[in-house]
Image (cartoon, rainbow, N blue to C red; front, side, top):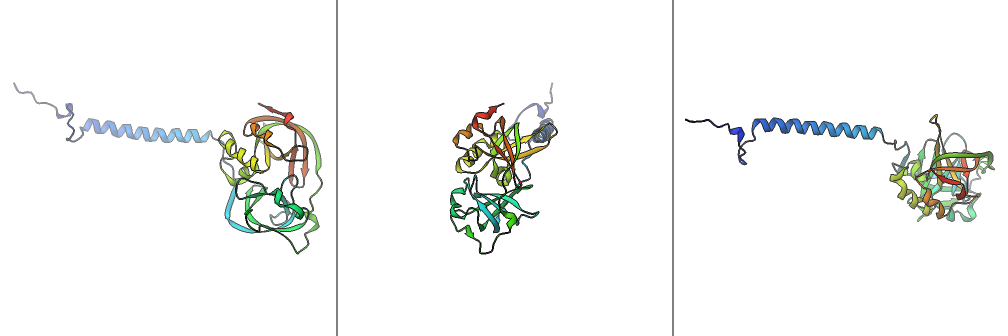
Length: 253
C-alpha cells in the first residue's frame, strides 16, 4: 500500500519554507514589531520632557551691556528684549568665565558669543580662547546697572540641583540621574549651579545658587541630580531668583 507523504511534515534546508511556517513567522514578526513600538511609546510617555531650551552655536553675535564676575559671570543687557535682562556667561565647554572678567566688572562691555535660552532664562557661551570681551566705547544705559538684591525671606523647598548651562538648552536631558555625571563636570568647571523646584500645582521655579554670596566648592557635587530639601534665603536680583544656602542646610530625600 502506498502512502502519500505531506511535504510540509519534513524540514529540507534547500527547499521552500512550508506555507504553515511562513504564516507563523509573518504573524510573529508583525506581532513583535507592533509590540515593540507600543512598548517604546508607553515608556516614552513616562519620561520627563527634555525641555524647550535651545542653543544655536553657529549664531554668534555681539551683546552689549554691563558685566560682573560676582558671584558668577553675568551680563545685564537690553539685547534680549523686554527691558533689562540678565544672561549668565560660560565658555563653549564645561567651564565658567568669571575669572576672566577682572577689571571690566561693573563696566560697559561688548561680548561675542552664542545664546543658550530656555524661556526667560539666558546664557551666552563665549569662545574663551579668543577675544570675546572688550570694553565698550559707548556708555551703557543706566538701567543696566546691576540692582541690589531684594530679600524675599527664608524658604524650604524640595527639588533638584543641576547645572544651569545644560538646563538652559546646552544638553537634553538636562536633569535627573542620566545627567548626573555631566552636571558634575559642569559645576566643577565653574558653571553656575541652579535649583529647580516644582510645587503640587505644577508651578516651577529656577533659582541660581550661592553659598554666603560666593560660589560653591566641590562639597556641592554629591547632591547633584538627587531629590533634596534645601533651607535658605531667597532674593531677587533683577530678573534672577537667587537661593543662598549653606551645604549644612541640604537634606537628601
